[in-house]
Amino acid sequence: MELSGDRRLAQLEYLGDATPFASRLHAMLPYWPLFENLNLVEIGLLCRFLQVFRAQVGQEVIREGDTGDFMMFVIEGSIQVSKQGTNDSPRLIAVVGAGKTLGEMSLIDGDPRSATCIADGVTVIGVLTRENLASIILEQPSLGAKILMELVVMLSHRLRATSSQLLACLERERGKDGGSEASASFV
Image 1 (cartoon, one colour):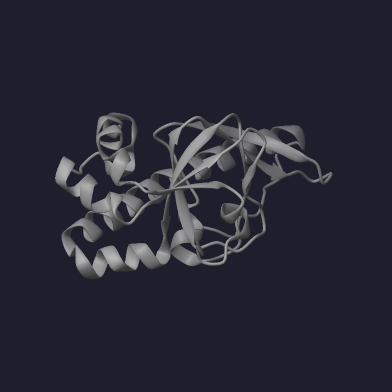
Image 2: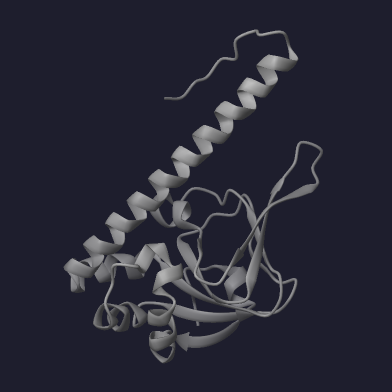
């Protein structure tokens, strides 16, 4: 099975499409902000476009810097998310559990992955590729619009949170260096 040429996913155990997981995914909606506004019928439709994989403990699912065109939904288990630090050693930045998503930015823009994701234990993930998202938009436009809108809202919330964290970091640095202004090239 070819999945947009992604060699990391090709190393995972392929479980098929997500149709057998539809009721479990529907039960996870309160913990899954991206899909909280979908009903059972819409979840069933979405499941036809999701591919499900099982990763074993320690298996790398995404590598920072690799190109990618899919996002993942953690169905069972958890994923450790790390970034390369300034001294070239990985720095754990999050552990993401069931009901959470990863890889949304590369799904949208196709740019290189911003972090490495490794299974923290036996983990089951649902994968939505850019190609399948395009198919949803064409075949199920109402569902596609809901998914896109929720992606935009989720990414907006994350950007706001990251901006707040950056501001706090800049303010701490300003306190350390006697109040000199930091330059920012964003807004």
